[in-house]
View 1: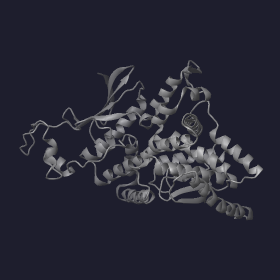
View 2: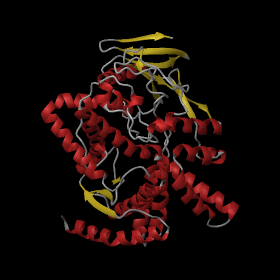
View 3: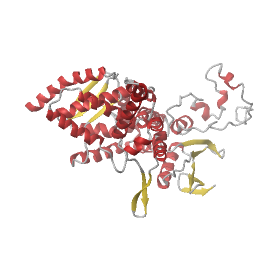
View 4: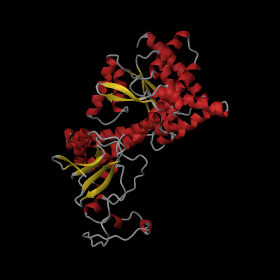
Length: 470
């Protein structure tokens, strides 16, 4: 390490306690912080994998290659990576200037405060997330040794194809054991406690004709449409081995960990940007440092013509809320309000409740689409723009698909239904995904959706795809 690098490291070590003190003075409440300076290849590896340690998969390598190439050609740059963990780990890019690292440190304190206090993160377990992912990665490597790398990777491919189709608000309730299912016994005869039958007193009697002589009727599985496709497959597939069940469980748990970050992208980045601005303004910066900070900050919040910059939109919304509440209820009311929003909201409620007509016009937001050979603005109405943004972020931006029947046609086939909301599914992607679901279910898979507002049923039976209007 050069003398200059050592001097800058010492300056950063002296600056971070001051940054922490200023942040706490503003009322930020974060986990204990751990800062590490890492070379670019480490930063981009963490960026590609989403964590410092995780199971290996070709898709992570693809992401790493793309991000590292953009960095090498100076097309984009990741200044830091921060992990929702306790303690909270922030990885700073080696080669950052001292002022860049000060700003990054201030920025990640905003993130960590958000991780700790936003209600949508309350179900995550930041205490041992890094260790649990590392342990799972070790198990996956053992599966590769015993089952073969290609077989394990192909199975992970299939799970990842539907990993977003979970229900983050659903509590897992243990159902009948896999052994009981394999024997063909009725699930309502398998009680977890001596009192479970009390919950069914208000339900009508059923009949069925299982080999055990049960007189109850065959119950629909699931009784209600099930949004958590991964959990349904894990609990109801009859052909999965233990190592496969473990992989599904791990990927589902990891998606539950990452889900709040997908639900709060605008809020989280806006909150971190809001606070790095105020923390940096309270540091004793030289004129040169102030100019460098202003340039870097401008690059972070620059609006885009073609997409939403979450740093910019989130910052402007928090500042607008603070200003309006201060004006209406008095000085300090705005700061109190944004702390309340930070705790209770996600992106959909944030945009629905606080993106105003004045702000849409000030930020010059609009909707556009391709017409002929040109891209044209098609909508400037503020309510339509707000509602479109809210709709695009509902369910973290993924289509809602539910399990309608796990025993379709009484043949053990899987029937899925797309909750159509004026947005059609990509047919090629749909058909490829059905083949992956078949790999998990081992029986024909059906998906009901709409094309040109007409109900269509797509099917994959293990050999070929088909579709028919219904």
